[in-house]
Amino acid sequence: MPCPAFVLPEATTLISVIVPVMNEEGNLAGLIAEIASAATIAPITEMIYVDDGSTDNTYSALKMLTSQFPSLRVLHHDRRSGQSAALWTGIKAATNNIIVTLDGDGQNDPADIPAVYELYKTQAATGARIMVTGRRKKRQDNFGRRCASRFANHLRATLLKDNTPDTGCSLKMFGRADYLNLPYFNHMHRFLPALMIRDGVKLAHVDVSHRSRSTGVSKYTNFNRAIVGIADLMGVMWLQRRGSALPIVSEYKNER
Image (cartoon, rainbow, N blue to C red; front, side, top):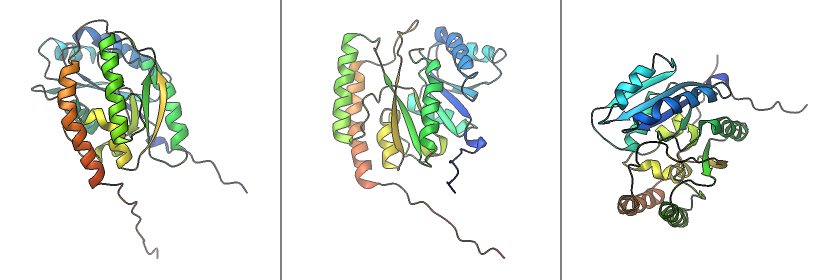
């Protein structure tokens, strides 16, 4: 008799979308509506926006939007702490076992989430711990940013051997527990594929769309990314040398 197919338990199939934002009031309503639309196809039951100490009306606008979108939860940092801290806050607060991360500037398209989820389910059906990371097609950034990104991706992939062509794409899906097992440090979001591999998680990649920013300005420059990136890269290499996936633990119980 053939073995039955592995089926994901229902409790593990629900998705929380985590969106860190800082001074993005002009991009809130449209992106939230798009996530709500994606939720009609993929099992998204909550979207968590983390306002990272905005100085504009982002926090007030988010609170107002909760009346229109019941699945929207709003968390707030009292001061700017960075994207990694905002992601950590949101993922710790999530109630579902599957996490999707998105940038709050609207450049990631929530319409890609169902395809990412289908790949995640296919890979997870083997019983493996999985992270699906997006790979941006036809990037809408300027020439300088694209060149800097290609160089950084090549350098990182060579040194960390994470086999990820576009770690800067924020559209990713992974298990909440897998993320919370990782060592926290500032800027860790840039190295999630390498950190996940270190912890025994398998990677899968999928092409996703990329859009131009409609309002607001980027919070990063090529220069400030390069300065912090060098130290962070060395730190992640150290973590790779000093760590490995934890063993799978089973417990024997004498059933009487």
